[in-house]
Image (tube, rainbow over all chains, first blue to last red):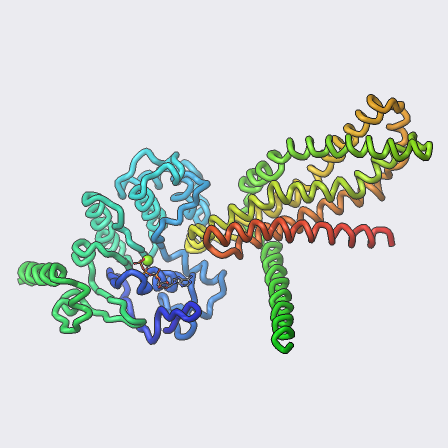
Length: 250
Length: 258
Ligand SMILES: Nc1ncnc2c1ncn2[C@@H]1O[C@H](COP(=O)(O)OP(=O)(O)OP(=O)(O)O)[C@@H](O)[C@H]1O
Ligand SMILES: [Mg+2]
């Protein structure tokens, strides 16, 4: 797959697979194309050449209407939240329920309250997005992404701007969604510890392409760029995690 | 020389391409009208923003324009000893031309620009992409109710403008210049025909509303997603819609007369 904005090539000869029902961690320096890759998976951005398949559908062949059908099974958390700023939190999070399931508002309200509670928010339903703090905004946007219980969840920086308690809350939620509902999750994050803890697969973007592998594989990689990116902390953390996992397995 | 020709060619191609895009956008918009769910709540809100909030501006402008017309025309008509004709002249010029055109231009500045700016800001903060990811068509959700609201609001505001302008001219003509009120009103009544004059007025304002609705939502949807882009799109809405309204005014007037 190849993508360029004018003369700026973002991806060239990039190719990767993300297995169903797993948590994938997208890594890469700022500006390497993590958000762009998520937008492409969501069909918001088309590649210049090459193909993208989501659950067997070839996105480049689909009309906007057909993409809509596919997107009903995808939840997306945008890097800046992308909440509708003229609507309250309740209306924002409840919007997909209202649109696609035609639920009545009282039912939506209880559903939304439950989802908001799971991201650690209570009593904010009546507020407008501009009255929320940055971290609250991200969690509301996260609630909107998961409210329809999609099969695929794309999260752009779910942990940025959150305190440690909420980071671990979102992390637990992601792991639980993955375990209980078998969600396929793609996360981009700079929050090494929590992302490494939950990831089944890591994809490191670099120079238009990518290196993919399990955390263990990447940790033992001898590729200088990979080891640089993970850093000393990341590698020792992974090694410890590896010991723990093999320890608990035996 | 070759460069200049090439430049001209590129400009023309870009212009035609732009027209094509507007037409396609308009086609999508019309196609979205019957599609469920109905956006009645959003439509009412857009009608309030575009229509109700413009009422004060329209009334005040209408009244002022009427006063000026009353003063100017009365002086001119007196010169020919035809001041009884004031009602007829004021009525005809307002109903057929000034009402729809001035309302169109005022609403363009007041509501059309705001709609472009709002949609442009939604685009630049990825709100439209957010809607698309929720499998909601932004055209159906954002653009359609606003375009419809402008189309409906324009004839209503036009009527309001004309009524206030007629009142303004009455005030000046009768109270200031000492014309007989009955003469003014009966001249008005005799001159303005429902089918011909009021019909033309309605048609014009409907077309202007439609044009403004299409242009303002299209410019919002197609603007560059940053602050400068939104600013350019807003200016462009005002310029394009004003020119289109004036052009359409001529076309309708010419065709109506045939
Ligand atoms: N609409 C666009 N037009 C032109 N260039 C773009 C556009 N969107 C993204 N880019 C370019 O694509 C590259 C990747 O951007 P992207 O937002 O995907 O980065 P990212 O990996 O998400 O970075 P970050 O970690 O800072 O969020 C950037 O270099 C950016 O300049
Ligand atoms: Mg990004």
